[in-house]
Image 1 (tube, rainbow, N blue to C red):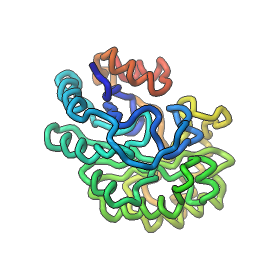
Image 2 (cartoon, rainbow, N blue to C red):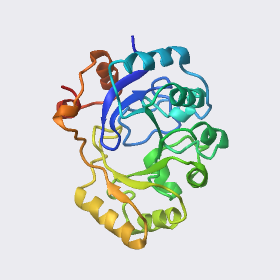
Image 3 (cartoon, rainbow, N blue to C red):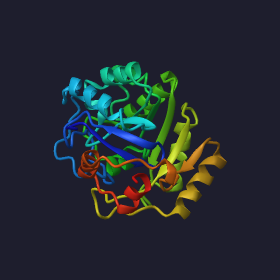
Amino acid sequence: MYKYLFGPVPSRRLGISLGLDLVAPKTCNMNCVFCECGVTRDLVTERKSYIDIEEAKKEILDILKTVKPDCITFSGDGEPTLSSDLGEMINWIKDNTDVNVVVITNSGLLHDKKVRDEINRADIVIPTLNSVNEITMKKINRPKATIKMDEIKEGIKALGNEFKGKIYLETFIIEGINDSLEELDGLYEFLKDVNYTKLQLNRLDRPGTEKWVQPASFERLHFIKKYLEEKGLHDVEILGKFHIADNEKIEKNEELVENMKAKRVYSQEELNAIYK
């Protein structure tokens, strides 16, 4: 029955998040070394329609009869901003439900004003910024060659100036790659002039694309948090484990859970944290 919905996902920052996938598996403009969805075989930057949006709307109305998520999150098997249906789906959810909308993006298309306009009714946007150094960004994100660091920075800064909701900037830390003082100083110099709500330090939580990528230690994350805050950045936080109270756990919809597990690996501990 459900082609586009999955979850609800045990999200460390969003609570009970119902996922909505607008692109075909693995449609992305990057091949990030830490991606939980696996390798991107064909990097794309052209936006187009991948789904039957009327069917997606029916799925949302159907699941909301039994599940009350904290939010509907545009994520899944690829980069949601590559979907030309993104704006219409966000507007429809805002007009027809009372659920918050979240967009998770690798920031590769945020320099496009049309993309920023389409997501302007979301409640939260989570853009990724792993480095402001072109070489480091390419080492971690491995983007399509046309994607440049200057465009990513331009897009994030413009989003901060225009977006009325919350912006949770994410920096995925890989020790030895983007955690040097030079990297952190560059991050500070850029972000001190950017409007954002939180800067969230993330680490590998599930198996990534490349086996050499290991979870950053919490000791290192605490050092980075302290260093950036002492330089002057505000609201730097470290993402921890997902947890909700037992009385808030939800009934498992086997079909949605299987859709979720098809996209990435979840431990039994994670599943037990959200489902009865």
